[in-house]
Image (cartoon, rainbow, N blue to C red; front, side, top):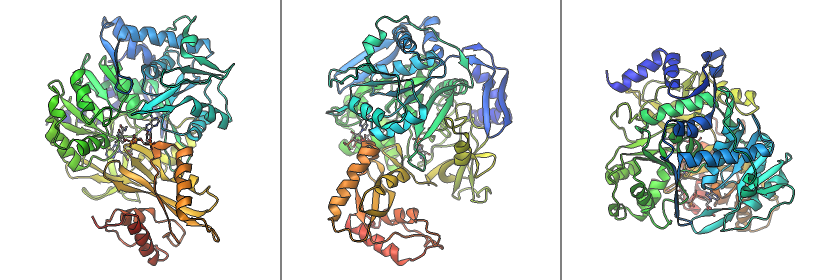
Length: 632
Ligand code: COA
Ligand code: AMP
């Protein structure tokens, strides 16, 4: 038996013993009474009775163990021409001071704090400061518009919001503070206080009586100590797209998060304390939470915080420059980023300029890794290129080749096999196991690894309805795919209306809600169509109200702007077409999956329940007119 099979088998035989052993690797203030409370499925409570502090394990622990001088964060920001190193000892001071500032504003155990931040060290400091005092952070990605931020403010009801005057996107300065002010204007819940990091690139206008500069907030406060919380308390809430415009507040339980993430660093990623690890994501996404901030710090690694893009800051050699300059051992990004680099530097001429001798592994996640990109990366980088499949909900990989245990043979297009903590099945609509190699709904047998979500924020019912109701005893991932005869997973598509744009998860339902609000639109649909760079991009179909005489171009321009204003630029909604009718089932359901196949030039089976097959020809005509529906 290979080493991977042995470890996976050990987990399968006794998951409680497996995770209890992993839990020995983190520092508890009080040991758990029960490894898992599974009395009320599908609600699971890991390490019940235990008490622990996230920030202590991420920061203070390493100082106490004599590693205070080790770099914790390397902030590399080509957009501001800055490279700065923060040691663990310095990070401890900065976090304790900002935690004191939050406490001085009345933030304490269980209170929520929203962070709307660019990729600057203060974002990480603020996250850790919240966990230091038992507060619950919710980071909102900067590419979301004011309306999306407002929805999250109303759901999380934060006491304080922490933000900055601006983000920097390539050459452009994006004001954040004006977006924050609009969001607070739109939200019903109002925070007591906003703490703002003023950046030199843009000056934020402060609201008297509500806003406080970061430096002023810290000025006279006492540093705060770590407050132990229950292992089952939330460490954070992270909102992610659901099937409607209302995002899901994924809750991460403190103890399970710590134990699982710490375990993944040596076992999945093959990293040791002191190694330099870099996830080129954003703190607003789950990859940023888990692999920019928490896992590398829990494991005593040095993490790189990169404020830049794969291309254009200044060129397609940016990633290789960072890897070489900081001696990065493992790096994590989305396939989109590699596609962007490949497009500009297909032969790797820029890569050849850098010393990559410390680089040992490339990890990819966030979207399906197409075999072309995988082959290009393997060929160029000459290190294992390891695809991870996971979700905001799980917080760490469901499937991966485990570099730290044993590398299994690679199969292009597959993130390999489920890792310990996850047993994945492809199920038929009736809940039966699909034969190996046949596509089904990918579902995970409960309970999942301790980092996986225990519920949705203040919404147990939606948690059950969204994930647990369809296949009792299983978590429904929302992905469709195959488990092959070697137990390898192949993730093929979503089973819902979520699309993946440049590794960003977006709801087409949410976009449809915006389009439907246009005065001239009677009905609409949004689908994700294949895109060479971003994997998928959204495309809107509009049916206009009777009697509308405005030019179609003008209406399309309006709806594009509306999605940008209400959801944000990150949606990359740039195209729509006006059609006379939409294809539907006899019961009135729009056949989005069939439309997507036509747009991508794929073959499809005529849906048995289609109301009028002739509409599909009309859709194909409309798509051909805008450059889609060509046979691949
Ligand atoms: N704050 C404000 N705006 C942001 C933002 C942020 N943090 N992040 C993105 N945006 C904006 C961009 O400026 C862009 O706006 P535009 O329409 O005005 O040009 C829009 O949102 C789309 O951004 P993005 O998806 O980054 O596309 P891009 O065309 O600017 O860049 C890539 C293309 C491939 C370089 C980019 O998508 C990329 O780096 N992808 C990797 C994705 C990734 O790391 N995902 C994390 C999951 S692991
Ligand atoms: P998010 O919650 O934003 O991380 O998005 C999760 C979704 O992204 C998954 O449900 C998949 O649809 C997709 N995804 C993430 N990683 C992969 C991968 N390695 N292969 C295929 N799809 C992926």
